[in-house]
Structures are given as C-alpha cells and as structure tokens.
Amino acid sequence: MDFLPIFVNIRQQPCLVVGGGEVAARKVSLLLKAGAAVTVVSPRLSHELADMLKAGAISHAARDFADADIKQPVLVIAATDNRMVNQHVSELARARGIPVNVVDSPELCSFIMPSIVDRSPMQIAISTGGASPVLARMIRTKLEGCIPAGYGRLAALVDGFREKVKARFTDVNQRRMFWESVLEGSVAERVFAGHEDEAAAELDKAIAAGDARGEFKGEVYLVGAGPGDPDLLTFRALRLMQAADVVVYDRLVAPAIMELVRRDAELIYVGKERDNHTMRQENINQLLVRLAQEGKRVLRLKGGDPFIFGRGGEEIETLAENGVAFQVVPGITAAAGCAAYSGIPLTHRDYSQACVFVTGHLKDGSIDLNWKALAQPNQTVVFYMGLHGAPELCKNMIAHGLPPSTPVALVQKGTTPEHKTIIATLETLVETVRKNDLKPPTLIIVGEVVKLHEKLDWFDPHKPQGRAVKAGQW
Ligand code: SAH
Image (cartoon, rainbow, N blue to C red; front, side, top):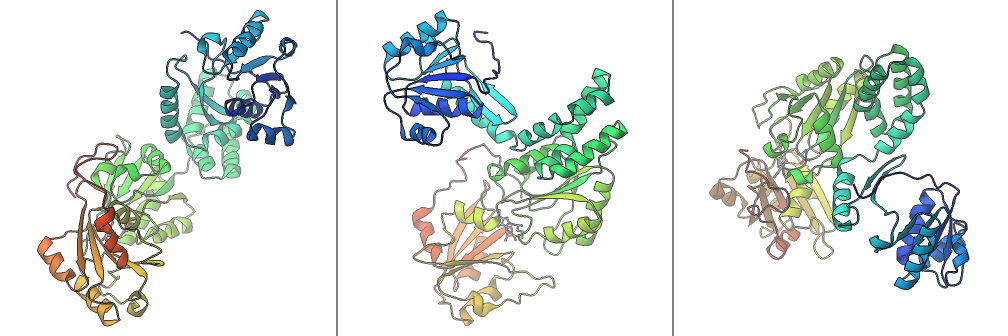
C-alpha cells in the first residue's frame, strides 16, 4: 500500500489553494463541500472562482504566492500552471508537515485526491495511487451506477438511531445482525422510496421489539423491465430484481432479463399469451397480496412500462385495498424502445407533432377505437397488440382519411437479438404480415416519421452494442 486512505475533517479549518484556474476551482468546490475555510492565492480567478468569491464562499489574495501564505493552513493544494511555483509550495508545506497536493504531479504530493462517489454522509473514495486516474474514474462510474442515490439518505437516517440501538443491544454481534437486517430490509426500501418518516417509525418499532425481521411486512415492487435489451433496465429495476424473494413474471419479459434476477429467488410464471391466460388477472392480483402478506419481497416484473397497457394499475389497486406496501418502477415502453432501435423518431418537426399509443386489442377481442382521431395527418400512431387486428386497423385508418400509401413499420421483438423492422404501407401491411410470418411481440408504427428509418437505421442486432446478450427463445 503506497498511500493510507483516510477521511480528514477540515470543517472550518483554513485551507490554501494556490492557483485560480479551472482545475483549482474543482478542488476548491470539493474543499467547500467538506466545510473548509478556503483562501485562494492567485493574481486572477476563473469565472467559477469569481462567482464563489462574490457569493462570499472563499477568501481571495489577488497576488502571486508568498512564503508567508504557508504559515496557517491545515491543508494546501497547488494548482498553478507553473511547475516551479508548484514545487516551491510543495517543499515549503512538506517542510512544515502540512499535507500538500500538487495537481497532476504525484511526486510532489504528500497526499493524493481520490475519485469520489458521494452519497453523503457516505463516501466512497477510489484511488490507483496515482497510477491511472482514468481507471479510478471508470471504476467510480461503475459504482455510481450500482449504488442507489438513496444510500446517503439511509446513512443519515440510521446515524440518528445509533445510540438507541447501542443501548438496546449491548452484545456487538446482536447489534451487527440487527443493523444488517435493517439495512437490507424494508426500512432501507422505505427510504429509497422517499418515505423517511415511515422508515423512522418502522425502525423505532424494530428497536422496541428487539428484532428488525419481525417487523418486515413484505411488499411488492411493480417493475418495468423494458422491451427486451437488459441494458435498458433502470438502476432501480436491477437493484430490486436482485433483492426480491419471489418474482412474478409473464411472457413479455425477455429471457436475458430473467437471467438478472436473484439466483435463489422463487420464480412464478403467470403466462399471458393472446387467448391463453395461464392465470387470470384477478388471481394474479390476489397472488401478489398473499405473497406480500407472507412477508416476502415480491417483484412483479412486467415487459416495457407497467403503466402502459400493462394492467399495472389494476394490480396495485388491489394491493392498496389490502394495505400492502408497494413501489412502482417505470420502464422503457415498447414504443420508445422499438422506435429508438429502428431509427424512427416518434415525433419530428417536419412530419409529426403528436404521438398516440393505442391498443389494437380490447378486453372482448374487438377493436373499437376513435378512428377519426387516429387517422390524422402530422401524427404518429403506435399500435400495441395490433398484429392480430392488422386488417381491421388498416381498413379503418384508410376509411377515416389516411392515404393508403401512409408508411407503416412493423417492429418484431424490438431491442432484442431478434429485432426486426419491416416497412410497409397501410395498403400493403396485411400482405406483409402474412408473407413475413411475423410473431408477437410486434409493434406497429403508423405515420410519416417511418420514412426516416431508411436514413437513421443504426441498430444491428447481431452486433451487441453494450453487454453481450444471448438470443432468447421468445
Ligand atoms: N407494458 C408494455 C406493453 C404491454 S402490451 C410496454 O410498455 O411496452 C404487449 C404489446 O407490447 C405487444 O403485443 C407488442 O405490441 C408490444 N411489445 C412489447 N414488447 C415489445 C418488443 N420488444 N417488440 C415489439 N413489440 C413489443
């Protein structure tokens, strides 16, 4: 170990920054975040530093560095573009035993600055000992992605309970187990969902009961899994997928996404193919309530977005009626995902000023839509579940005024390794569907914007763009 990682308390302590450029400004911001009293010595200040001075956040000595500057500070940063000056500052500080950092010159530093993941009060500092700041930054980006923003709020909340917990559990092991169950359980989830007050009440009860697990009542996470590509999951979706005890999923969730749920979670398939409902909606609603009441963390995983033709609303209505706690996590809906991966902007100033999402499949199997409102120029219409009703759909759009030559895109298994875009017109759509043996899930996009596909098509399903995904067997 070349450096000892420590966290230094510099609140209200005098810190000196020599240099007034942009690099200096970044260091000053950090020092200010940690509550330091910062003096900047530099003949000139960058805009950012000048703003800080105006706001009264820093002191400024508008001149070159003088040896006397080094008398008072507890920490020194040299960030001028003059190596001689930096070296001089470093030598003086080190001679006096004051920690000094010289930007981009590890050999002149007595301390180095890490890359930081800031979840105040929690901090993660990453360092490669100066070997590769870029690598440290890359690791930081990875951590930023997988550590929920709410961890800072969680740390702040539990900080206020430390003494109480210490008094309640005198045994260190017991205390550790208690904190583990709090930090992995519903108290943490309440904080992440933005309910600090509920979390605090729950934590109080758990302390009184002497057990955090007993307090856990179970909850349901209604999560949108997006259209298929696992890279399109949200951070929150992924975290809850890895925390859940039970996963209730249906056919629309891509196999590559199912691979990311917690390995030992119980999986319950509730089907839903056209006309072949493995489990009736009412029973799914009840199942979610029952599982949560058993004290489980239940992940209800849905294709796309749970509130867009996903019946997510009905499911959480039943949960609310039964007093079961839930969270809803939005997902990328099929229209957004398919359009993006097929190079079809859903709106475009030259072609379309509105975009409508409609279902081509009603509860009783018929399609009864406001065709007049749909068959409008300068509008994009996206039909979900429209494959089966394609003949009726084309007939009605033409009968209500759209030219038969209006372009249509069929996007099959959008964003997955089997992504396929086929272009037709309202007139040729039925024949195209028949010829291409298209299978659900397929999305139908109608409107002039479809013309842009030819120019803007970019996605090659055989060349994974990010994470390598295996072809699923949808
Ligand atoms: N909640 C989902 C939609 C459920 S309805 C969402 O927000 O995307 C099911 C319909 O969505 C399918 O019949 C199909 O029209 C469309 N769909 C879902 N995923 C799709 C995909 N990957 N490619 C093409 N269409 C898709």
